[in-house]
Length: 470
Image (cartoon, rainbow, N blue to C red):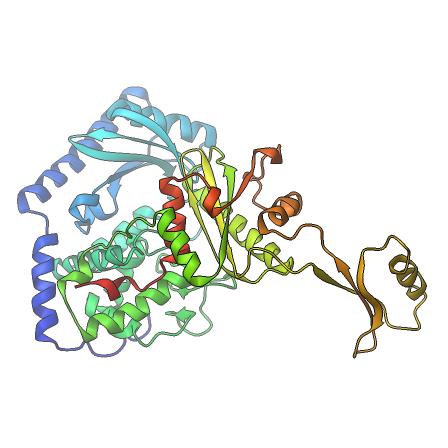
């Protein structure tokens, strides 16, 4: 890795704040002992069950924050990894892994991420039992979790008790900003990424001292050593120490990293315990939103799509794609788009778009060919007929090309959105077979719901979260 960044600022106030917060976050010794006991018992039970079933299990281990003590007490999940031979067929991997999980966990239920896993309870803790392959080379994984034992070994041999305390501080700092978690819903900092950053910079404050001068995209790798196939909108590049071909920060969005860069300067300039306290966004009811739109002299349309039966990590990228598609097509239809937002309810997906005016002009400019081309005659014939809906023209523009101004039929935003729905790329699972199931309303006519309030807060309640603190 490269240098650790600028010196950590000495600050007695920050020392006191972080000491108090760290004391609150630190699990009691009795609790840590209980976690260690449950971890050992869980592995013993799984291995015994594997022997009884003659299962091809190679190794069972508890990894992640529960194994290293870097968890936040109210977000503790025990991650149990069930590793099988690399040549085991995938169907058999799923079958054996889920069977072992059901044998040791109470109230098991099948969940889905990139592949199926079980969630249940053991010893009073929630446990995720995840099957994978016991690979020998973490740079050549066969499933998404195969690097996990190598991550566990890498961090467990480097993290001291002081670093563990700093990891908890960093996780809570990110959590308070709403950027902790790599799932598609959040697009934030994973636990593993957070631990690597604290390990690299030595502490939360060391990380923030470096972050306050970052510029997007941030590259924490040696020149020429970047992981391949990076997306154009990458926010942070940090190679996985056990697999240099992988960017650990691939899930992190530019918005969330930019928020942390701003927060780093603000915290270092004014450290306080409130920086570690989550600030839930208050509800943004429709009545308040309508009053805000009156102030802004703008208009919001709400598109309601049936929610497909997908796990969040598959659903949310499609929801964001649908939001972009609606906003971009509305802009192409000559509305001035001010913003967009989306939210997910149990039965529907909402996409909101705000425009400067609810109705677009009746005039639509149609570009024509330059004089001298054969198709000039066709253009003139089309737009000089007695039934042509022409408001002005045909005429020659200053650039020398022909043009004509025609009359639009659909002018209201909601009507335009309905007309463009058939050509929108909303995501392969979001476009319903019957577009009649898609509802389009002006905000005043949209049914009220918590999801609508969430989307309205995202659209009309934008503000740096720490600015409203005490």
